[in-house]
Length: 253
Image 1 (spheres, rainbow, N blue to C red):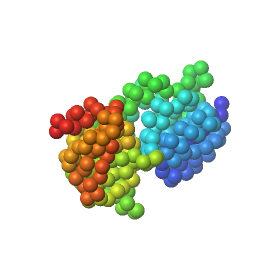
Image 2: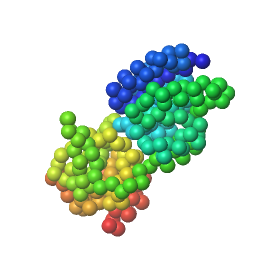
Image 3: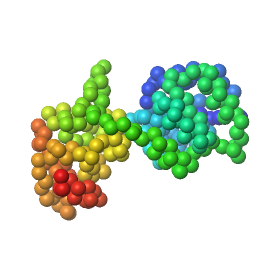
Image 4: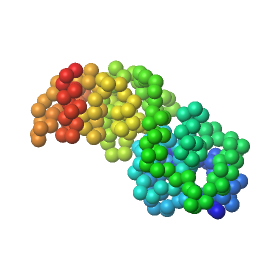
């Protein structure tokens, strides 16, 4: 059969390369669309209902796993990723194939052969349990001490002690430094909650603060607080009611 296919990757070069590679399999793949982040991917999948997607994992706005968790329609998924082969064994166990960047033609051949062995009744579609188990396995295990952000043609490495807080605004999450600078990140608030050390505390749906950079708390309306930061802007951040447990932990520090 010919699979209606969507390519989802935040690197346009990767999408262009995948298109070129798939040109040799035009009897198998009919590329009907592409997306540059998880949010775009979510929208185009729900709209076009593809049979199959080639999906990157680390993307801005929504990661590959976050996007999958939000789908109401689940296509066949072939991951395109830079994770090492050991970690990616989980995909094989869940009958899902994966391609490591940079993609080799010979490896794509094997993916196509695997795909063609399945019928619609023996699909490679992910279950919510599979998404969760793979996501848990691929969580970073190493302790990290900094966050990298793009600044024009440069990549800046910002140490945790330089960070005052992270705040989501519309589709982006901004890193705010103690000296008053702001940078767009490629993470979601949920991503950061998993990656950051315990000194960073989520105080609302859209904000994570560095507890070591808090100056004081002020009572606010409806049981909320204002968290006043020790940064150049003396930022005031409102807490969320559903994050009171985190606030209690914050006040113990």
